[in-house]
Image (cartoon, rainbow, N blue to C red; front, side, top):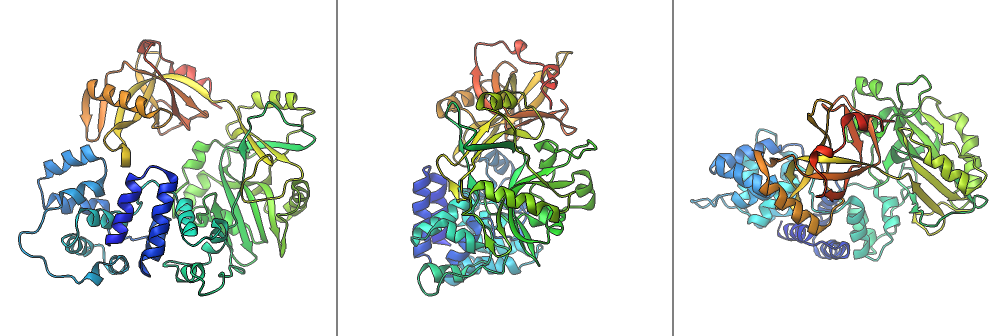
Length: 527
């Protein structure tokens, strides 16, 4: 565990992307098999240990130290694993010996895979008695899932590719045809075998992405325009006998949307936007807030599928049968996609319409008037562009609509995680009702600089009126200008509203809280 715990420590305290990549690459070259394969699974979110629950970890530490001390420490640190790792007491009597092999990463994972939920706390305690604080932190992160060390699955794969001078897109293509601890992947990376062949499996292909539009205009004779829909980008991969759905990060989300996977029986690869149908008879897309009810669920009930019926609005065709059409220009792929549509179930798939505009000025007017709940902006695609992985200059542009803003009052603040665990960095804010009541309308933890974070943290500490574990209620005096992409009706919130992508645009030290915006005013922005 020592090498893995040192890797996690390094990732937590390293801020730069290149620094994190160097740490991952060095570990992948130096760690033994199969430890490095299991580490790669953990870093990419492909390790599922179901026996240990966070509540059991809390019970373990309360039984071994003062519960009040634990609660106070957890409040300050803000992270369960870090708190328990630091508080775990040294045994007065010598613990039963464990040989070094029993504490290797692969041995720990084998043990946690095989242990029952009832026996898991004792197994964890025995291992933690033999580990230092860094080792305990790594063990707890593994056992409870979700490492939260400041990297994405894509970054972990990039670090692996960098370790062996591979193209990360090549790694992505073979990734879903293999399973942890990825022996074939390392054999290929170190030249012992050829590149694993994913053919015959529904494997992921890297997405083509867009640059933000910074130019004043583009020539619409060269570019086609279509709406940028506000769902999640997905790839549908079918072999004719099996279908999988992948997110933009390459995560398999087929289990979260089984009705889509079941509805596609073709042999093709399609690119589109996953959306949820609205309440209208026309079946138009609902807001992202509706889709969010289904995201992240490993199992979906029939009621959930009925209440939030999913469908895919298709953008592009990458592969049709045995024909890889990614090298063809966009206009030819679009024509093939249009011809392919009649094969698909109309209740699960439709085609993203093109926007007809005589020139860029007219397109700008159309974009400015679009406040549909599911529209995030406009996409501009060169008519002659091939489908290439990543962002390539001048091929595709995204032209997001201007954000909405509202002046809101800070109500509560919560400690952050990782490098922000010592700061109150997550802010809940509200607006006024007609009766003068302040109701929460959103929560944000981005948009401010490091210096502004320090100022906001001081404000929270100096203006606290009540404490609720890691949350502080503050004096209702500070106005925050909040930017957000859209706002929607919500039954989950007392205000009846939910913001999409809220972030702090400005700290309004100049504005009295009484002059912040109202709930009624925000309701006029609902789409």
